[in-house]
Picture 1 (cartoon, rainbow, N blue to C red):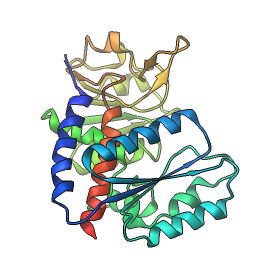
Picture 2: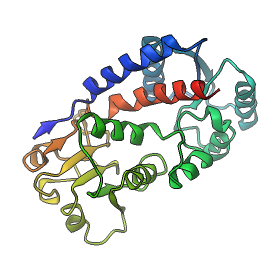
Picture 3: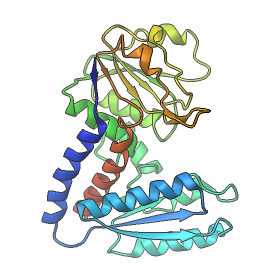
Picture 4: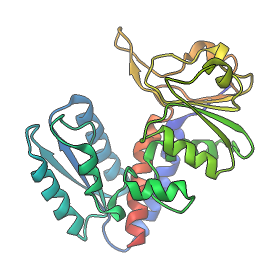
Length: 276
């Protein structure tokens, strides 16, 4: 079994990106909006700011109180849409319950939607057209590419159907000529379907849900999940100990898919700037 080192792949891609950013005529700008004081969101935003500095992208942070009105948020997004110095806009999720995330995300100009969550990028992806791709699925594809793993003709099984990971992941794999099955909470014969996968991607948010008896001998297993145990330790959706005995490639948690997500956000911001 080979461990897929997300940190190493991320560093390699950031080096490449830094060269592209330095060759770009002008300053590339990313605006990050954080609403409220969710500790995990604050950590994510700090990491994004640090990553921007590393590759030479300017990061503008907007911290709004938890009780901010939806109108105020939309007003800020409108101003950022008009700002030619801002190439990407990111609204950190989750949002306070009184705010409509769908409305807020749709307010971001499509050319500045570096998260790829809007209807237009998702629609373009479904049609196999070039577009901004959600950062985590984009990162998974880059990991597979970096390891020389071809998905063409392979049976890929995805656990999870979220708009952020599961669905765009399925479309990316389909566009890469994989045969794709999406599983979810209502799927029957789940164990048998998983055990038929050449490529198994777990993104359901259930700690150590995927066990060795659910994995085909020699399968590539990508663990997108990030969970915390009762002891406070991080773990993925995959039971690492039992699955490593069956998989040919396996991503660890932490240090697998996670580092790639922010890196692909930076790539999306660069690509947005390059298109202007």
